[in-house]
Image 1 (spheres, one colour):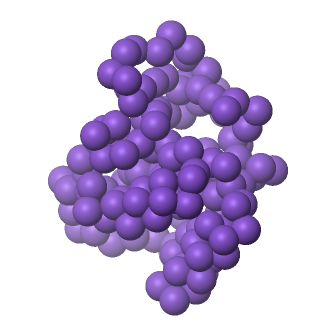
Image 2 (cartoon, rainbow, N blue to C red):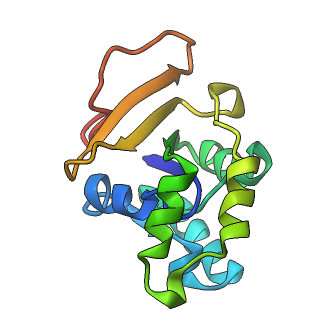
Image 3 (tube, one colour):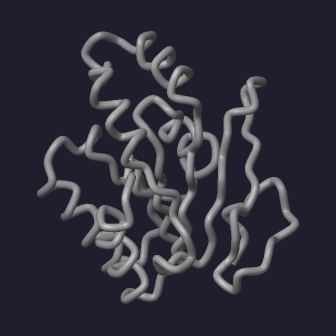
Length: 164
């Protein structure tokens, strides 16, 4: 059982990473998709109850905002990883400006999230923390930040759905 917590500013590519890496193996929990906190909570409860792998697709900029997912997933016996989708603020602003008008995030909101963003660490309860950057060729550069034991991992492609 795998729980993934995505972290990053709006328009960083979190949903694209979900689509590219987890679409066929994990349920997506997204405020943008579900529209209310109540629905998000129900999806999380159902995923934990049915032991369904899931991805939390939100900005999750601070340890406090991530804690509710990490603690509950760990208590349910899930392996929990954080994936930081990193992008330069100017690039996120450019991506944001290309979105449909209804999906655009106000510039102040995007920059505010950027200022609040704290990289997750294993100390928060994550088994692994991964850094993902779009490679400019339609793929991803994915590298480990640190595993829970504090040792650097050597894989550069990130885990797959088949990994433990």
